[in-house]
Length: 161
Image (cartoon, rainbow, N blue to C red; front, side, top):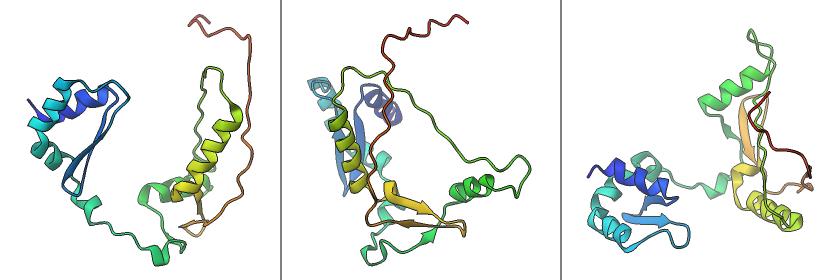
């Protein structure tokens, strides 16, 4: 069986596979991994580790001494920055994303607390970008309350216009 297909099959089940320190790691939803899946992982462990290993990522070393110092943008980040300016035709527009979630009854305070913990835990969620073309991780940020909009009783889109 093709290793890429094995990885894709596991991803379709919601199982995330990765290689770390020459070991095969995985994260799976409860109850998803059956004995047959575990056998497949054991049987193809060496090939999976080789397939999932990334020499570029493995070569990256953390520089904690300069953690909060400015560092250059990637080419894609720089393109987004230039696109926000009027320096090019059709520029002057920032990149936007919109997401709508249809959640079951949710404890808004717990959701906000989890979101704030995520921001505190992951440096790039506290990154700011300067117009000079650098980015910087902020050691601390003001954690603002989430903006919540609840639309009760609205009908679902049925595909008709």
